[in-house]
Amino acid sequence: MQEQAVVTSTLPPPPNPSPSPSPSPAAPLAFPELRDKAVIFEGQSEFMERTVTLFREMGLPENMLPLKDIVESGFVEETGFSWTVTRGGQRHHFAKADRTCSYDTIITSNITKGRMSNIKGVKAKELGLWVPIHEIYVDDSKPNNKKLVFKGVMGLYRSMSFHLFE
Image (tube, rainbow, N blue to C red; front, side):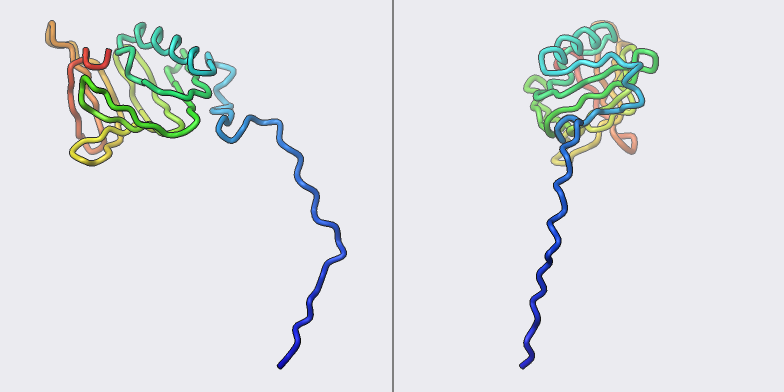
């Protein structure tokens, strides 16, 4: 039987890295290249106030992003690009529409009058499957019957009454 030698080091352990001055891991600085062009708001109450105002101005239902635990949200008026960072993914059940949506930690989209496009980070449960939502727009082609159209991948879509999301 052979004996194994135990080697111990006399070198001191490596120093601990100094803490970085950046925000906590739950609150990264989102989209640093856009920050100087964006209106940025932090926290839940400011998010709710600004989002309601923005959605009203854009003709979208005020309650379309019922998110909680908001870290930061931003909007670049010149391009319509928006982002929202939350402390973690979440789900919300829209009782009036009887639909459940899932939201990632970071949600992005382009917002224009009556439309959210290039949406990332939002899924809707349909027939037991989570379908990524790519676009939401207002269809007001029929008087007194305004609809929201939710478009997913591969041409899948569903339209629902606008009023279910107010």
